[in-house]
Image 1 (cartoon, helix red, strand yellow):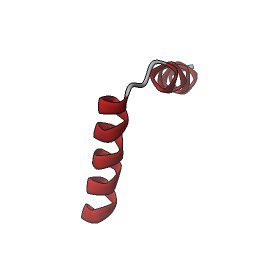
Image 2 (cartoon, rainbow, N blue to C red):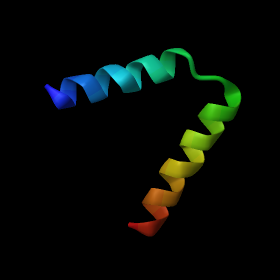
Image 3 (cartoon, helix red, strand yellow):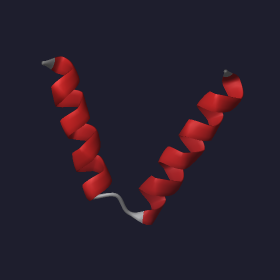
Length: 36
């Protein structure tokens, strides 16, 4: 149930994503991949 809520929240976030948020999320993903 928690996973469903998280997925729904992520989808909603992508729905209302603006350029700044998209850049921030992209930078965060790149940072995580770089750390791993």
